[in-house]
Image (cartoon, rainbow, N blue to C red; front, top):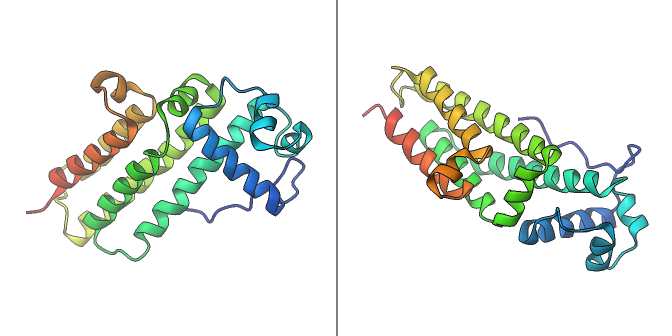
Length: 200
């Protein structure tokens, strides 16, 4: 996974310390309450700042929403990679990685996840993150087979099925059919993978 790209304001300038704090505060607000229903005036009032301060982060409310959602998922990448950095056993890596995703998504309210699903540009940020996560899982499975901790029978197929399940979680299909949150679905995926791939 690539190193995190420095956050930049529109026009390519690196964010100031105040802008970084504001972005983090917006993330917490969106995670708790969603974002579609807010106007820029609402956000400025809640953040105790001017609309021009928000425009310095993004030129429109819609682009601001995408920026905050992307910031949330970039943070997930950082957290997951740190969780697995010292691990060498593929079973532990997959468990820690998917449990970490589940824990991270527990921060997100149903309103936030619903708004992501309903707003295509924000949904695209989630899709990008989900594709990256599926790619990481495939690499962990391949490593486990190579190390002999996973059975190699159908390992490639299982890796692809994991990718399909991650896509199903991200698109809301799994949640709609089962009534579970995305976080709960990632926990179940970890259990399914580790049980199905075990060499013994």
